[in-house]
Length: 404
Image (spheres, rainbow, N blue to C red):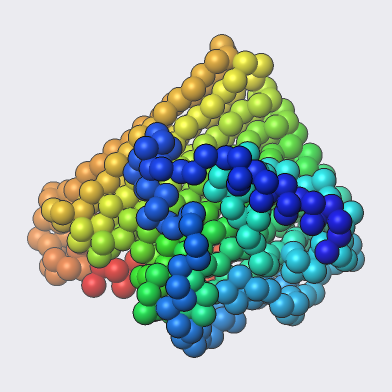
């Protein structure tokens, strides 16, 4: 490992010694106490390894990297244009030091305790680098798998798309059903240069025993386009924190999310769009369904500090509650310190419309199928914006399975 990388680890450990421990009384943590995702303290006892099953990607990929319990091997099936780098992040510290030195920890560093914990503990990860002007037509996929062999796993993703380049990157998180809890921590840093395009998809589909804290931050340059799609379906307790930052004029940053909670699952999504340059656009759209005794939380914030006139920003969260006992909290928020902007926010929690069900049932559609059609129609606004057909099919199948 390069000396600067060792120094960064030491700095992260030093930050942990000086940053106060999270108590759950902090405003940012009042819905999902840090103890619930086991952020601090000793590593949880490993529940015991279970065969992870088939981890092959479900579609054509330009490269595939598997991180088993956070530890990565060399990428498989890499077929990319000259200059593109797809590498395991730990190995990249030696092989591609020039690409990492000024970027790793640049967006998710050591200033907050959860981020410092990941920086100090990560075992493996992914580097994707696309040089200026190169268009990567086929996605890159990383698959982080928890087998139960470790009680805590931590990983990072670093994506750099240079000026005028484009790419699609998938981070998939999954596990079999485990005999005890596992804590997962992930950090994703996305750098998108001038006029570049990036679609990043996070598919959270853990078994029922995993507790996951996920951080994502995107730096969107001048006239760049970034789309973050978060699909949250599995896990015991999941907290996802996407932050989209418009750092250049003309930037276009979109945060899309779909979640479906059942049983006693708890999902929290804290989504931030920050405009640091004028004439930029952002759109936050998250939709969720929930049933049984599950609980979902959406906190969205549009931040427009001084110096960003011409901002055009929208935020929407809608929730469909399928039965008594399930609960959805939605907190849309605005922080506007610049004049001459267009900003709006909306949040809603509702039940399945009886008139919609009656309409379908009166035309011979059985009640269970009618309810499924209504829910799928509600979520379709997000599903149809997933560019990969195999992922759309996968999400639709997972939603239908939860509706049975």
